[in-house]
Length: 491
Image (cartoon, rainbow, N blue to C red; front, side):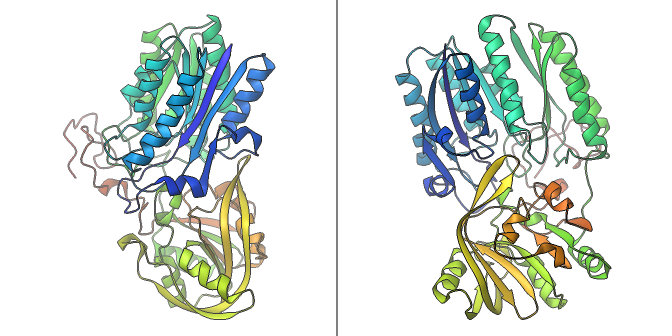
């Protein structure tokens, strides 16, 4: 038996002004067949699992490209073709392949191609018509018919924040092994829930729904159940939430289960989603708190969803209120990082921070402060994986506001992003993190409360007003019941 495996992952915010080029992959993660020789990150956990499992069965393993870029705008056509064609060339050189397993994202858009994953899978299928092809996806994917038509198995992460990448990789490997042995004959069907939103799986009805999916997997004939949450900030035809069911040689069971599950999820739409606070309301609540730290999430500037990571809306508001004993980050500003590095640790400097990328970034803010620390080659944990931070600067202003600045766009996942530089978050009154949900579980352990803010920016959670032009069906929350209002969505 011979296994071929690879990773190509980025999440595309089609409204972002920043193109994703080869430099984005080089600075974040780009390995040519050597990813399993290093510690894993979120999108390479699967490669480690698949190699270990394949070698356990005595299979030969061909490891190809592992390419990951922080989300931004559409990938340039040259970059996409280069990375895609490297995987395809390696596949051709590998000869006869029994199983192909790919860790993709599911929401990659390139210039001239709205469905990169479907394009890759179609080309892989043409090279290996008889191989078992399985794909692991981030649940913030666009689940397209082209993807479904060109692989045997799709498994999405179940948890958001993502802490089950290895578990889903184990699941996909076992299903692929059983398919190859003839033990099962998987068929897949999906259902469009006609929803666009974000769903935190760790609490309440959303946690219960994930358990319901797991329970369904114990029913006769059901092999795997996924909820593709969808990636909201992408103007593509298949944007939105979908249920996916893999059944054993029973397309009708797969279709009926996917539709029943999808309609159940739609009926829970007000219970599985969250409401987010306005910026000024959140700051008032945080300032009035009698214990800390109060953790505020700047949701509108989450680089993990393609936002620039350099917006200053929250920082301006903090300064206007003269709030002190605050930590805030991470601000992506390579120019500011270079100035601080040149000045050195301990230097007192004047600095113009942020607001550089576009209108979603707000206006730059002028600061006076002291460079408290500078560290390079640090990482922060996301589940089992260690995600890079680049070079990080700790700048302290005279108002006792500790600001983290770096030169590698990334959201905040873990308190260690601050603490590695010497900032004790437990002593802070307010901690502001540029993130959506991935920070939640680690910060919940130190926070007196967490407030998620519907701030302005490239990932603002105002889903009703997304400027979508390509989706054919109406969706919630733009309309209350799109199953009854089958009208074309207007921008």
